[in-house]
Image (tube, rainbow, N blue to C red; front, top):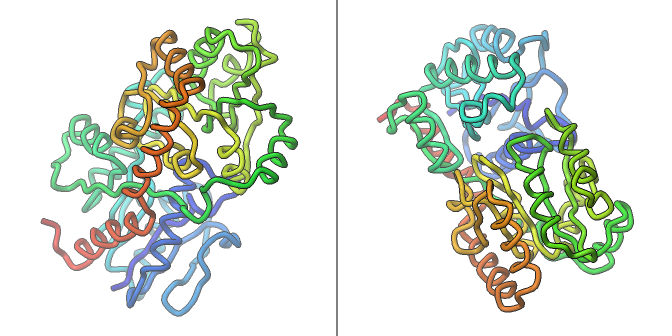
Length: 372
């Protein structure tokens, strides 16, 4: 079978979120491709991090880059002498029109629930392009049951059109790192132990202002809150909030941290926290489990589905509850041990190999015309 893929989300530097998802999935599909012929369509030449090309894995690079997904890609698909049997987009923007059946993968639809957290232009594009892609796709992949439920309810989609393919984590990357590696990363970012760690893009739905308020309530001057992630949108108030509440010396913003440094950064943390108001999945939770770090996170959206009983859960709008969960994970020795043990067991349920297996099954069904 011939399978086409939009590889642009994976083909970027400083990947976060959907970019990480796309790259890991492409690498796993590359490893499991068997007799299938994959063609990855790009608007820029493939980076060295992309899977190597061979007789069954080819790249096609073309432009124009402006509105590439909407126009350049579908025109190229129509021009192909040997068209794919199915075309897969590991994000929710599929081609505007396509001569072959398409499959799209959706991380989340946070913009529908928190529209004020998005710029007007971005919000319009997210809503219009996503809805069009979902309506024209033969099948949809959701990264969690929660995302599937949101899609079905918000867009009135037939549940039979939506399959679930959980993301995984790199077990050969995210494991407890040795002390010297941890110290090197801490020195680079001038981090002092003990520290509570958040990883993610700085944006309002990550709920970082409430996290800072909850951290202030700990009243522990020896603990640092490390917020690692690139600036997203509406981030200015987040950056100034620690000063507003008087703990700017205890809150450290690292900006973007390269993927190769994250395992050591996680391994050195006393607690990993994800206080988001909404997540489609929450891959950093699995990465923290892999590095042997106790996890505390919100009990909303997909996060309980991912964490199971291996994390302390809190109401993300209640700063007292966030603070109490942080304190318990930091100072209750028995609870820390329980969380680390439970996390080690929990990650056995997730792997990129399984993600690729589930994705490939759907692509085969669509490519062979079995859409039931």
